[in-house]
Image (cartoon, rainbow, N blue to C red):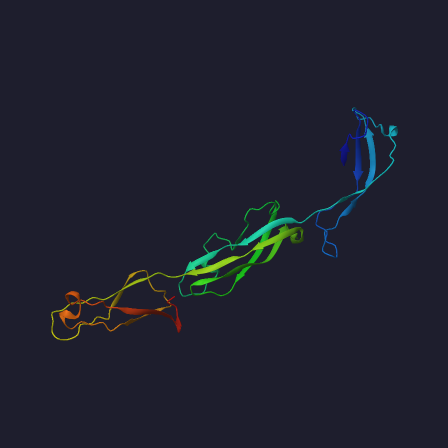
Length: 239
């Protein structure tokens, strides 16, 4: 019911009843938003004591209004996900416990009270260091057991899934000896910091550095240089 004291005598109140009712967004064939008529079905005027004074008024015109529900805006964003390279494809198991693959950035009006979300996200396969898009896919919004998704204007915001490089520090071996006329080499190494992924193999190729005479370098020392590659099966994962 709609109550108004406009255009009625002082202390009188106009009350009308209308038959219009709408709960969901109405979409027309062309995709635009539709409305329903809100027709007045009855009216009366009462005074300050609740006595019906309608006989003192004459209704000269009725103009029906309309009722329209517009879609409720909601933004759904894919969560930026990442892990350190471990030689394995990024999967759901790599998402930290308690972290959803999506979130609501907080723009109003957002999800209506009592409604719930089902959201799917997807991304291309990624194993090695780099990034791929993390895309918001199908969205279903429920009011209890009722699918009310069509009543929302959904904005999807994509993000990324990233595999970051695994950091290691490698030191080549050192050696000393008293001069004996034979070359001194040392093709050993040590991982001083970090570790290899369990799936990978470290390949170290030395640059052929050797010392035979004291004069080969300052105080008889030369740099024991080497190059490194890390193999994931037949794939170079060195980065």
